[in-house]
Length: 579
Image (cartoon, rainbow, N blue to C red; front, side, top):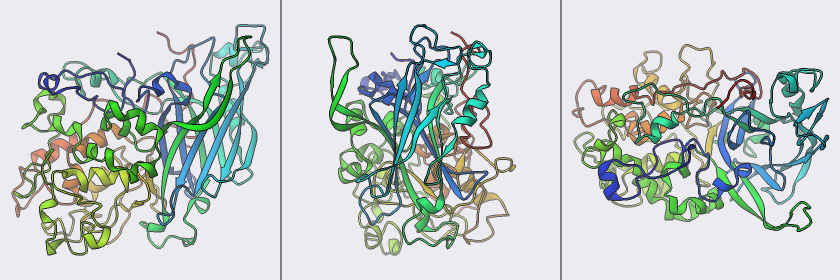
């Protein structure tokens, strides 16, 4: 059983196992080793993807794609670095009226040994596995590419002070190496490629121990603390990313023309031929996608093990066109462990997370139930996102698919600023009424991506209201804070720029997604928990408070993030940590 797993609870393999609360093998942590094939190819394995409006340069968007899971800082003499013969790509979709990507950034890496006569990685100013990269950009969806950076520098692994700082090594500091590796492309993008502390945080040990997060009888611990990854960080002007024809200044902080979808991938050529004389293998044939990543959690704890390799090799656009995977979002497996009528008792740590089974004494969102489908054809849906005349059958595709109205769009289309997807503030008890807008990252052009509305202002990281709970905290403020809940106007609420509206490094995506499976998005729009009686004065019930105060036990990264690009913390050195 691997020691590295995925974001949230691994799937139970069979019903008898479920009944005893025994978890089968799965893979955890945002996208580390999440599928059988990619587990054997770590250099091509996406681990995490982030996209956020740059806090110190709000006219730009920062995108960070991480690769190579669980790098040991002391993992010599063959330290991790980006792989050759791999295409690492960041894809951007900004126009739902056009199929596929609009912009693609392609990185390819090259390695040389400057001092092959030693087993040391660094000695006397020379590096082995010295790595550089070429960055190409396409603005026609990948049909043609132009080189915008050649021979971009990649810092070496942070081996230790003698290798980096002494005269016997590189005679510099690691921060100087990072600074020297931040360069600007000919087209204006700022780029960093190199080692970093793994910014994802989660208690892998607790979650792997029968879903014990937070741990019931011991202290929780960041299972990815003291591990490194390799980051591709790129800071792009909003003017480069916005939809063609979009106004130079957004019409509002929720301007639909400023929504982008971001996903990352890695591809290898189809054939590899080993050479009998010891020469380097020869790669050839068509390029095949072997890994991809958009939203955290998807392939880890939503897609079953038999479909994980399939999910990795298709694109988000293939995914939306092929609805065979949709069932896992309409009836998510994790919801089974948040429902006392099913297997909630198997996971006591999840006891605060409970699905609405009788919301407003009318709607059942338990697995296999109808959710809001009973309203199909009701005149009350007219003009809402659930009206067939607005988005077709996209959000109410059929009976027995209760989470088609919340989890499925969060992962597949983003959420529109259309009724009922507005806060319960101002709805006067009717979840279908107009309320307080708080999100609009709707881009129904592909499947799983990070969707970000670039018009939403940045929440100052020093603001007392800044929170790693992202949109969930924005919803709480919009419902309860007098500064925001006195009207239904579009108004910036702190953390509207947080996950799942993009993803900031600080965002606690494990907690947010577990809360979302527990129905918190439904509650935010007025589909309250079962212990609220419709028409009552206060929907802030014990069930709602239980979900909002739930924690996995690990709520921040092991290192503080930087305040300037590339924002990721510097990698751990091999002499700081050990076995």
